[in-house]
Length: 265
Image (cartoon, rainbow, N blue to C red; front, side):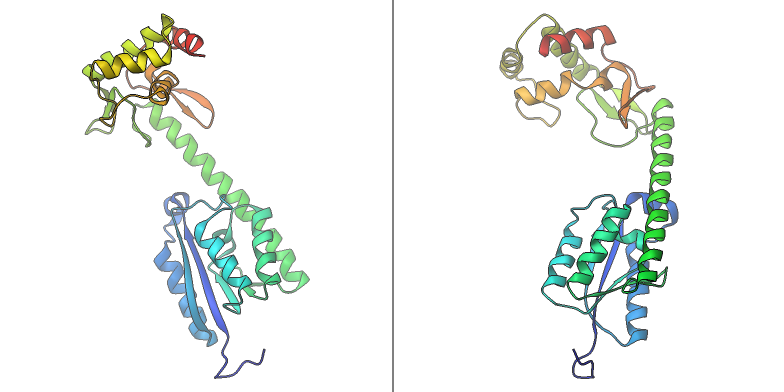
């Protein structure tokens, strides 16, 4: 393709931010967008579109904006793709290489601003792989620190996010408090299950009694199963597959939980 004023180089940008990145250094979408636009203006490229990924982890491969970017690259909508840095592309060496290769196979050049890497050369590809490994290592370290932080917060009785089950509410102090009336319902469900009552029976009984669910709806088998399989009711929380003791009050003893699970299974 002949580049001229009538046929300028067209550039697309990809920006992404996840919770981990915001916690680390606050390099948000606006800052990334500013860097890309300033670089494109300096190069004299015509900006086509900015693909924005908000609150999406770099470990996820099936990202909506990324998929649109790859599809548009195959359609030949732009000549260059600008990434603020390699770790905005992804947090896995394998994914970064695959994304870079897919874009180059589609005829698009790639620019990683922070690293200043040109992946069209063997040397550039080597540096890409090195920096991708660094990005993957850095991401896993951040993830590990956050996980440990959540464990410490849970052990101190703090709310670590996520959906609170029936029987609990978040207090103004950030700790989880028991709702007595809802706790009675939870205890009743576990006792029924431990006595050998079938899930369909429990569902029917709760609906007959007009007992509301956590969201105020009617009970279903899946709703009852969600209660029976939630160890949060025993005063523990599951983080990264590990059982962590939390300071929130237990609604049922562990022995009742185990008995109800055996009968429900």
